Image 1 (tube, helix red, strand yellow):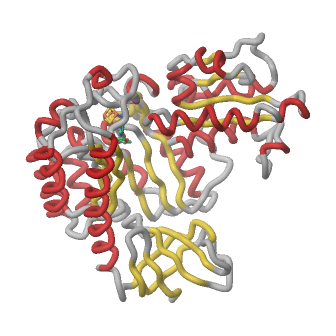
Image 2: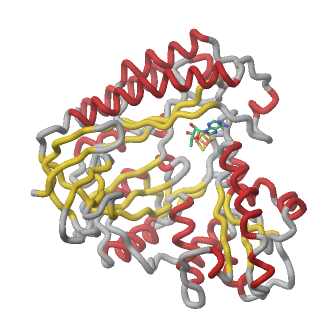
Length: 423
Ligand code: 5AD
Ligand code: SF4
């Protein structure tokens, strides 16, 4: 979502500002930040430290911190780093042009939650489109998982109007976009209003988007198991444009840990959803987030997570060591595990998940797949794109085809990518 936000920030200021290749050439440095885990948040301070000296040579230079670290730390950030010119929360960045034009009487902190106003100001006209582009359709979260800062940093659940989203999708597809990834912290809790003032679900929104002729693929992330409604599951079976990919974080395979995380489902309920969706789309790429070392996690709880992973067989995954976040319910629960124990568990889990990713990718060997080209690869004449299962695919070509769709025959499969030859 920060990628989407950063693009929209650029859209807002693009009449007066443009991207430069290095910080020393900039008149404004904008750090868009993430607060989800401690490591991500700490990075911000070391980054700001790197830019502070640039003000000696450029008196005009403004350093602005946006995003969830700005929201969470607020005034404390200014005290720790007085070099910052403005602190802007994720629901207030529509104010950026005014900050850059010094229109705000030295006010430096902007932390209101006014999504309605923000999206109104952003509008739906996109200045730049990639073959695969993001659209935020929902923000914030009312679930309050006991480990998570999102309900505090992004605010409560908000859904954009269906028609604004469709207009934004048309603006992107008119500029060459062929795949749209719908974003929300709780994207399947989407319930936007329509022109007729009725409420639309995520499945209804996707059906509307499918009517756009130039659009080939749709995906959505991140979903909560509790909001995996029947109409959405059905749509996976019926849709012509929905990617065979589902990111559905389970976090843990232990019912007790799930309860203490306040996830509001059991492992059985999670597995039932997986079974239903696999019945509709047998070759779907399933993806999940995992947290190891949540306070109270015993070796039995951890083994239950491994058991669930073995049962589901994920094609993609993101796994993290539990990170204590101020303000969350779990913050005050003492952790029973040493860092070393958490590291060992993470390693064991990741090794299993990596084997599963490799196994999923290997099932594509010798197959022909369509790939949307997103950019250049690491080597000369190498390009990279994605399949509709959201795998990265790499191939060699003498012509730059970024932004196009191509067909590859897959001849190598690794944990994190496929390699193929252009057909
Ligand atoms: N510690 C570790 N991982 C976390 N996540 C969210 N909060 C924490 C935390 N406090 C992970 C979850 C979530 C993903 C976006 O980040 O797995 O799904
Ligand atoms: Fe955080 Fe997701 Fe839980 Fe919401 S549902 S509190 S965003 S982990």
